[in-house]
Amino acid sequence: MIRGDSQKLDGKMVTEPEVKGMLPDETLEACARQIIVNYFHEMMSYKEGAKEGVDIEFVHEMRVTSRRLRAAMDNFADCFPKKPFKKYYKMVRAITRTMGAVRDLDVLIAHFRNELTSLTEVEQTDIRGLIEHLQREHKEARQPMLMLFEELEEADFETEFLEFFVGEDF
Image (cartoon, rainbow, N blue to C red; front, side, top):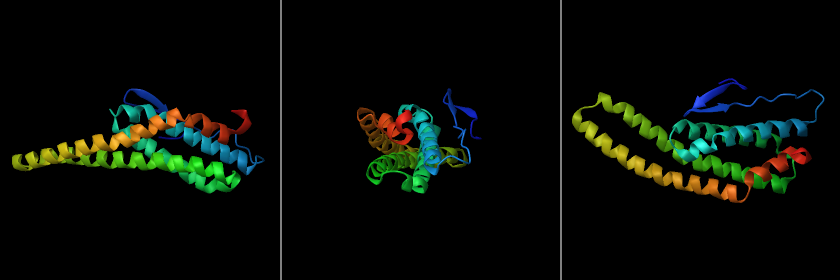
């Protein structure tokens, strides 16, 4: 997907943000804020779909975007006060980590399901047992992710993050 384009995931429209309006005379800090906020909005646009757990692509996209956000934060860390920045960075890293555990199992389950048709009946039985085991692990792996989302909502993480990175304009 090209920045600014929209796509449907599980019947919902999700749009990749464009970084508009950056001019050559803007400060590095202003550009950093805009880039970080855009990645943050993109990451959070996948949260509800990830929580629902119907389409594995929401988890994948949220994880990928959280990694992009962390890379941007790494690049621009010197533009922000160290202590509050570190707090937000750790939370984004926690999101990436919990999404990774779920995503890894999504990939394994999808792989084994795709392999079923090429196997003998006996092999299919064994693989179905493995898939059932992985699905139980997946259900367990989703719990920390859902708990993290709940904690972030209770702490009003989204608002705090945006207030810090957008600055006084938020």
